Image (tube, rainbow, N blue to C red; front, top):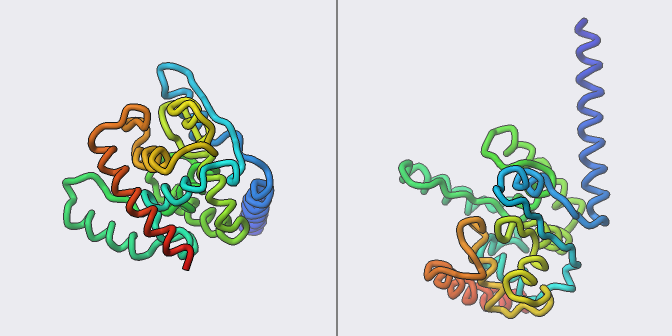
Length: 225
């Protein structure tokens, strides 16, 4: 019996690692047209809607990557998937303020791993799988591909996914035509795109937009050095 259990575990682990590594390799080259979150939202929304159009990174505004880095992950080009400083600061904040909303420290790579391969949630199993896929895509994709998939898979409004879809629906243009201000506005809503809107931004979102624009200038200057 123990021998059979060991054989089963060995084959199960081999199948898991083999299939996940192969999936990551395939998606290094194939556009990601659907994600688990898209299907989950279809069942959550009262009004069924799924607006998504894949575009290559060079078909987006050059300001868009800087906008999401300024909003979500300023050290994206420097780290290997995990921002240890941000994790420590978030842990300290959550410990000091247990009655306030939990601060996260997920990088763009981690969010991409979650969006493409996993499901929403905070369980230890999901976080463990997220860390595993984060390492894989950092090793096998590279920064440009991670950014490309991220910008195509993020939820940008209820039922709207990716930069191209939100550009068309909220601004009446293509992702390539987005201005720096519009890119910053989209990025400003990303902590909660189902609550905040880039089409009808609140004063809070406009303040975030202004801060992101300043961060974008810094990141661009730093990137040219």
